[in-house]
Every structure is written in C-alpha cells, then in structure tokens.
Length: 553
Image (cartoon, rainbow, N blue to C red; front, side, top):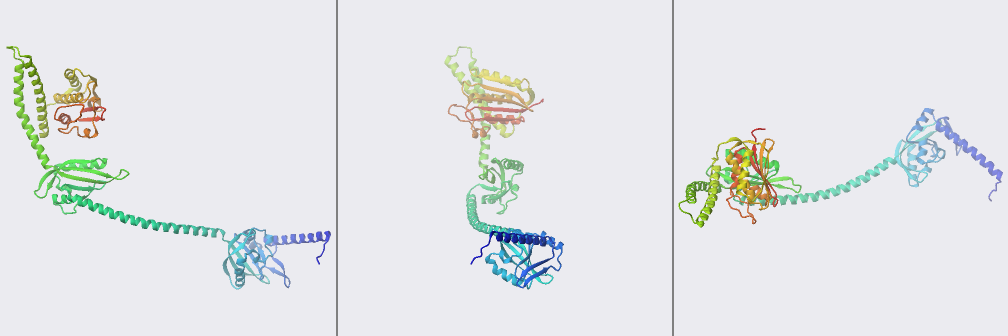
C-alpha cells in the first residue's frame, strides 16, 4: 500500500534533501580546491575514510590545471575525485560526477572493455582507448591511463583521460586524404599509362616521319639540311656527303667546303635569318669532292613553326646553279659584245637621219619628213636600250665608274622637273623641295636615276593623276622621293622590283623595255653609298625614294 505524505512532511523532506545537496556540493568544492585531505564514503560495511597519503594543495591545484581529465576510483569503480576537465569532457557539472560509478559515463559497447581495464588496472599500469558518453549522447574518444595510488588506509585507482577528439578527426581527415590520394594515384597511373602509350605511338610516328623525310631527302638531287631553332645544323642528306666527300654522319666542318670568299657573307646572312625568323637565301660556292672545283649553289631555308608561331626547326636546300651562272655570264658577255657592236651602226644611222632631216636643197615630201621623225624616235628608244644593256654589262663586270663632285641636289631636281614638263606637257608634277642639299656624286648618273623614276611614275599611273616629287633632309641623308597614285605593287613585286630584267606586267598599262631601269638605278645609288627603296600598296600607288649621304649636316 502506498504511503501518503502530508504537505508538511513533503516540505520537511525536501528541506532535508536540499541541505544534504548543499553539504555535498560544499564537500565536492572543498575536495576540488584542496581544502580537505580526506573523504568519508558510505560503503557496504558502513562509513569508510579515504585520505591521500601525499595529499597536499599543490598537487590538487596541478591536477585542476591539467588539460586531461583526472579521476580517482575506489575498488568498486566509484569516483572518489574528479578534476573539472573530466566534467567538462562529459558536458556536466562536477557535482554530477563525484560519487557516481565510472561506468555510468560509458556507452554499453565499451562497458565490457572497461570491466577488463578495471580488473587489469589494479594489477599493473596500462593504457587503452575508450569512449565516454557525453550528456548529449555524443561519444568522446579518449586515451585512458590507469595507475594505482595509495591512500592512508586503502589503494585507489587513478585514471588520466586524454581527449582524442581532435586527433581522431585529424586521423579521419588523414584517412579521407589518403583515400583521395590513392584515387588520384590510381587515376595518375591510368593517365601515365595512357600518356606512355601515346608517347610510344607519337615516338613511332615521329620515327617513321623522320625516316620518310630522310628517305625522300636522300632521293633528291639537291643538298638538303636541317637546323635547330638557334641555327645549329643537325642533318645533311646523302647527296651532301656524296658531293662534299665528307664522312657520312659528320655534321660539323661544313665551312671547310665553302669558298673562302663566301664564308663571312654566308655566316652573316644565316645569323640574320635566325635572329629575325625570315627566310634564308644566298648564292655561294661549295667545293665538289670529285674534281675539287667550286660550284655555285642557291641556298634557301624556311623556318618550321608550331601552333604558337615559335620556330622549332629550319629546313634548307642547296641547288647547284653552276650551269645557270655560266649561262648568265655568257648572256651578259653576248649582251656586252652585241651592245658595243650595235652602238656603231646606230650612231651611223642616227647621223644619216639627222643629215636627211637637215637636207635643204629641195623640199622633202611631208611623208618623208614623217618617216624620218618616226625613225628618229624609234632609233632613240633603241639607243636607250643599248645604253641600258651596256650599263648592265659594266655593272656585272664592276666597271661602272664615273667622276664625282660635290653639287646641290636641289638644282639637279629642278633640272629634272624642267625635263618632265618638256617630255610630258599634259601631266602635272607637284614639287615639295628644300633649297639646299649638298651631295657627292656624278650628276649625270643621279639625273638618270631620277628621270627613270619619273618615267616609271608616268608609265604606271593614270593620265589624270598628279605625280609628286619631294627632296628633303632626313638625319644625315638627302632624300628624293617620287610618289604616284598608280597601280601599286604586290608584296612579291616589291621583293623583285630591283632584279635584272624584271618587269611589272599589268593589263591596264602596256609598257615597253627590258626591265633593267630600276636594277641599273639601284646599282648607281649603291655605288654612291646610298640606297633606293620602295613602299607601295597594290592599287594605291607607289613611293620610290633615293637616299644619299649628305656632305654638310
């Protein structure tokens, strides 16, 4: 039968329990702060007194300051003492720890391990990992160290608990990282295997490609070579070794078979191409091993570039042009002889035509006068062609020599403008010139160049367009420019415009001549220490400029 308590009895019992709780709280506080050195615990055989043999306040303060949890157990597993850190690990107040059985704070899965630990811990010092059950049912992994300690009348078990939460989290993260690393390593192995297979395939393709290139290069009747991006030659074809007599596979020493007079020019031209990335082109002579004779070759090389326009190799050829050079020499020799031979009868015919034109004894029929005039015009053109041919022969033979003096280039330009007005009265020449530009040279030859540029400007521009002539000072140079609005030049035409016998062909403008004017003009200006340059856009006209050294600056 259940007991029935009155309100007063319940209030009295509650007051008694409150006083007991306050006494327990004060006792725990005193133990924690080191104010008492003994503890009375109610056991099966009555009250028992526990006193630390070496208990002192300093020891307890040290325990309180520890970052690890510390508890002391009696043989039954009851907590006799606990520091504040242990209670914090459980997320409870210290009052709820003292006097409780230690297993209260363990999950069921760890209680059997704890019983084994408690049993062995009384015999020897040991360590093991357990988990504490926090007030919110969260498990706190701990490393527990068991040590026996002596009280005044009894032996107690001291437990030091180290929170392994951060360590376990670090181990967990490390495990995850290791797993990720293993996965990455596995992927890396797969990629490496794929890359190795790809490299093997590409290597085989490159090998086959190089062997095919070498096979084709060996079949060509020209010298073939390749070079690294910085210009070092690394391959010659079979034709090279047959021609030079060098040991097969020998790369260095190619200068030894080059004509001594061509070594410096070849070196300079090659270095310029390597530095600029522009195509390499040169005519030079190589010694043929079979007869020890030097033969002319046309050297040509192009850079091979990757997708980023970076040069990765050079491919070059050397073509034997000895027969062509000899043919050109014979042609030049024939032109020289023919020009000289033609000059005498031309002079004679010109003289006879002048005599006919000046005949006064009886009036000449108008038809005869017209024929004489046409013959004189045709003769003048023929004589100009012969003179050009003679100039070409002299240039080739290095005999284009003439006297030079100091003179005002502006006076010469003005004279050319007068000639223009006389020759082309229907055209307009716009002049923009300085007053004084002193140069050193042959006036007749410079005038020849300027008139040739004027003639070309008239020839390759429309009838209604103006032509501009400029003469000005540019640093230490005197410059004369002829500007027209004619057909202009393509890139290929600009690159070849100063070659011998090269003519610009255009359907709109039918022109005569052998294509020697600009070649002769360029050589004349070179012999004066200057240069003849062109700037032009196709369909937008051209600008030819003579640059000569100034005598007074």
